Length: 190
Image (cartoon, rainbow, N blue to C red; front, side):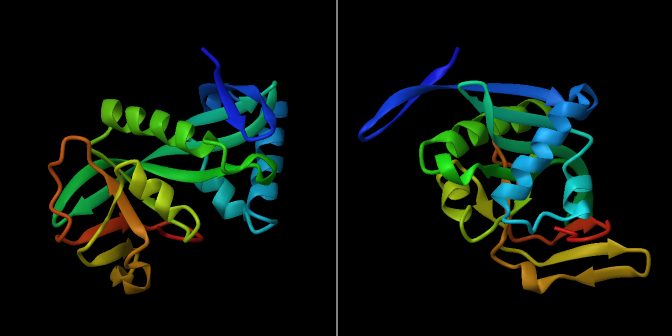
């Protein structure tokens, strides 16, 4: 059911959220999504960033039929201490600049949180400074333990990511002081 969004002095608009797997995004839908992400990230959304967002569930936000927001939840294997865990990794979240600060990001994130709770051990993401407040307000917590990436050459610490990697653990069973290690990938590893 569409949810009305209001902003002082503006009429309410109906927000519609749709969830699609990458395999079910038509070519035109993928092109519109890529265009949105290029706009949201100010031209700083690389081909590697795009690759990271594919292969999972896409929560798409529409206002009056126009794509205005997105988040991808893709599966990743992360090590918590020495235990491998299934994480839903949040990628390419953003809202078109013309409609930011209207609750669209919050609505998308709440849907993502439900997806994490149903399908993964926990959620994880690497937050921008701009997104940190939203994630924290919706139950995501900063990982306090050491961070690393498992590369072809071995374990490489990533202390520069401290304070920016967040997790969502609806079951509350994560010790956030343990080490957290991600799998290697091209581009940004977190």
